Image (cartoon, rainbow over all chains, first blue to last red; front, side):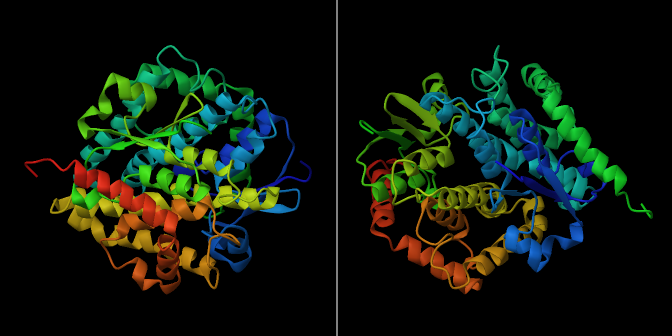
Length: 219
Length: 219
């Protein structure tokens, strides 16, 4: 892949820094050893015609490689994984298990975790959010418990580090403002293990450095 | 693929009939012209050791093919699509676009739609649900509006019917109890177009027939 470009936001408020989904793509590219350029857009530009032409839902990341635009972090990480054995084994069974866990991260684990994030950090203080919070925590635990069971003595979701761990770790970070992950030692150790990878640390520090450079003067 | 088996539930209440995710897999298999057997389990069996060994989160569907168990409807539909040009074009750009829209259906569109389904059909009458409903509808419309823009004059999400349309249609069905889709004529026509496919009709009628055969006597 040549001339890879990843689109993220120029700046987001501190509560969102390190959670925006271009982190997944940056991390996958670091693991795969692929160099890339970053395009940063203002949050207010996300609904512009130019950006919506690249991302129909006006979100980030957008990924440009080999002259094609691609959207959806899961699809982008899968495309990178298909080119890097670090991110996905080549054998059909290993590949299928990796993809199953990628979808599990995004379609089964992410929704209740992102719902709790929204309750606490976007809707905090609204009456419905206070009333819903206990049920939302229960929904999160209903995902963390089977995840802890799955991990058991495993270091990673499948037999080795893969793209699925990138997605699951970035999903689990959505509730970093709570102690819920820490209540499941296998999951806590797993997140720490994945976040200790040099590729993650580099991806995160570069994402955060961009926000620091572009912090609004008035903020 | 030989000896394909799909696991679904023996019976679910009427509000959930036609929404359970084995429908996606049945539909994909019908489109691909692959025959399969169905294993139905009681809803109460979903947390059993036997079932959790196949599906770590105790959900359906499970897919068994070539001696391997696979979970997550998105991953299963992708695996079927990789073997059927009806479901996914072979050229890299068409393939990438199909996969992008598959993730968009499950990771961008599904969460707010399923949240509204839960508010109306699982938590109806709870105080938080009543208070949250207007915001939840707004979140749904924030996905339907760009989807309508994308569809415009298109018949399908990409240039042709694909696995992405299977996932998006089954996601849009989550709010069939509302008039929200009907408010976007392009989206409404799209859902009708996809649901008119013989493979969808066969998959749905077989899923529903199973529930009818297994309706609890006391229900």
